[in-house]
Amino acid sequence: MSQATLRIQKISGHAGSVPGEGTQREPTLCKLIDTTTCIGCKACEVACMEWNDLPFGETVFGNTYQTMPETRWNYWNLILFNEHEREDGTLMWLMRKNQCMHCADPGCLKACPSDGAIVQYTNGIVDFQQANCIGCGYCITGCPFNIPKFNQETKRVYKCTLCVDRVSEGLEPACIKSCPTGCLHFGTKDDMRDLATARANQLRDHYNFPNAGVYDPPGVGGTGVIYVLHDATQPELYGGLPSDPHIPWTVKLWKGPLKWLGNAAMLGGLIGLFVHYLRYGPKSREPEDFEPLEPKEGSQP
Amino acid sequence: MSHPDQILPHGRILRYVFHERLVHWIAGFSYLYLLLTGLAFWSPWLFWLAVLVGGAPVARMLHPWIGLIFFYGVIQMFFMWASQMGFTAVDRAWFKSINHYIQNEDEEMPPAGRYNAGQKLLFWGFFFCGVLLFLSGLVLWFPEYIPWNLRALRYTAVVVHASSALLTIGLFMIHVYMGVFAERGAFGSVIRGDVSLEFARRYHPGWYKEIVNSSSTTVPRK
Image (tube, rainbow over the protein chains, first blue to last red):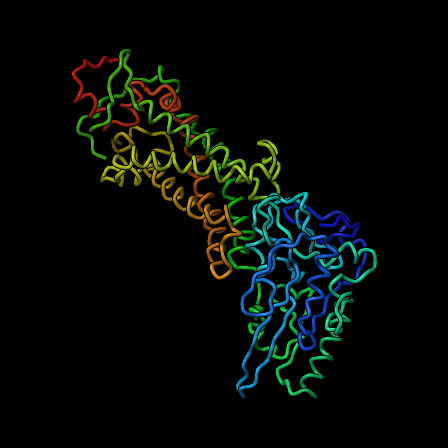
């Protein structure tokens, strides 16, 4: 979305190396969401829309406080509300702010065929560049978190930018700025991981949440958005947060071995046919030049 | 045989009637477009191919529509030719002596009918890949409408579409090589419709015999 002047480390659909990659050291940035102190006020939802100038669409009532079933092309930040009954019969109201996870190994970027339509900055932010997007929707297939959303009118795909325009100016993302409880934090990945771990320890040691932990899934190389969960063993309870997200294996196959096998086969085929022509030539000259064949009466194959 | 193969003046045989030629080129030209744009989406190193046909966003928009035209061609071909594409004992023997075919020793080959075993393989390869490309293509056309709990459809479609496209590319390269470079006269047959008697006798002896036997015309010797 933004044309921020940040260093880039990964470019989608790009032939050759990434210009300027690794020439400057930058800390990886990270958003920390502590679901245990979220009160579901939706200030982050409003701040996201306001800052990013997103046109508002209709909300959908689904018997909960949730604004709509899932994020939209113009609604990048959505708190998911889930009621969970524990074994002892007590109720837990789980709220999770859902948005792009800014994976270290982004499936959207891997699947994208268009040069520069998705970039990953050196600070870890994964950003869609709609000017380069061709609208194929492969990113939708590559994403394990159901985040990129297609706009039928512009034929482009949109998602959370981690407020890259703010971040590149030294500001925190709009959602962080708006959070009244302090359940949202923003900083370097190392700092956020330490903070999250400390909070998870506190929940385990002092608040009777023996399974409390940090959600930073290794299947996608870790994420630029990490969660503190009351029960890190069951992330699915929090609106279907996948317990072991990874880029779909078919996408990896398609963009990996199949690509090399296919390219080698196509190139080999072209060379093979050319060499065949050099060695054996055409089966005949012009039709007029045919020699009459000797009749082979009764010949068997 | 219901096909109106007929001996024409000047020692020619009508091999493809107008409808067959037309359908062939509907499929042929649409396939060329699908190939160029598909390769552009396939590899960053070939992305520039999309520029040749109006840019990648246009290609993304048109590729599915042209795909429908190609699939129409494939279905037409199925109804035109499937009945002639059954594999016979001669075809199995043909595959066994394929080395002779590769080395242009056509006189060593079992007598192929109207289509030799390689052409039948091409036909069925394109038919089945065409069906797979159509089905997976529908999913890739509207990925945003596939609900999250059916995402396996999308995961399947991306590999099925790419793999079957690669198979057709292999078939396509051999098809063009045979038709344009190796068998002189074959390309003309799908443009003007006719081949020489010698062509028929050399490459499709079974078909040649069938026509000569069923024809009341005297076959000119040369």
